[in-house]
Length: 212
Image (cartoon, rainbow, N blue to C red; front, top):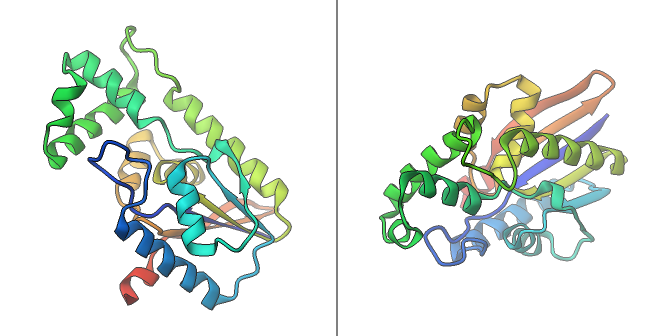
């Protein structure tokens, strides 16, 4: 039996010029996560993180004294490319989009994600399609399992975690995306790997934030 803990990064800087930075709240969430992990005294023989800055900042704030392996396969989907392709179809300029309220930006982004998943427009050439993204995350999990003796910790993103869960439960794309919206920053998802396959034990556990 192997156990893989998937951690969503702390709150990033939504609506700012550079999203890929933890906000002050994101750092606080990550510190609380680290305290919770240490209190449980779980022995991790392998720790991984994506190459995105928010992944690395979350790891450093939580368990910065541990050794970590960086694996780009655990990176989130390219939200900038997905949004830009959507804006192209809508005839909206990026500057106009950036001036919208956070609520309106989120509404547009939700529609951009749906367009990415459906991808029925011949004019759109994404850097990575929905199917390619799913295949990449499957490969990431496979490699992590192979590198793990008994217990691993992965600092990654909501989309990647949703993809792992969605594959395990045979979710539709719509169900996977809906799950993604529910995942909390620094939430913990526990995956069990045995001879019977991959099973999801817990999803989106964040008692470390509720205690604060």
